[in-house]
Length: 160
Image (tube, rainbow, N blue to C red; front, side, top):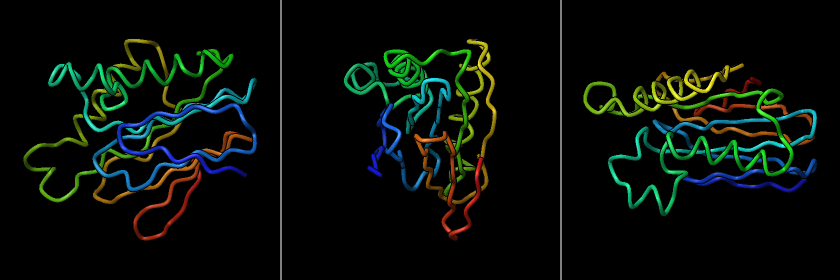
């Protein structure tokens, strides 16, 4: 199996059944994981912030940094490999409140609100999620079968 690492403010898509896509240490960031089992195409977006309007230049250079530019990038990239929205499952991980984030910036909460709003506007249902709380997470997508596993900072692993 080939491991494909998705960094912070990054988006990768695969149609290789021997790939495992992984993104590490999600705190307030969010991973959007999509998979079309019919054509075995999937991808992960690891975005940092909800709204690209805070820095249009950065959004143009790296749309994966923001929810509102990264989510369309993820879906369109999957469509390029034959995926169809109606066949895709969507899972969301992250959005934690790290340190004083919960009291002051609430970045994780804002990120999750943006995800829900974007999906609601586009008639997309989230089939599973592991969000909130106050711990980091690592997410893997197995391209052979679409299985998504989440490991938290304490090592606890679960399948979504």
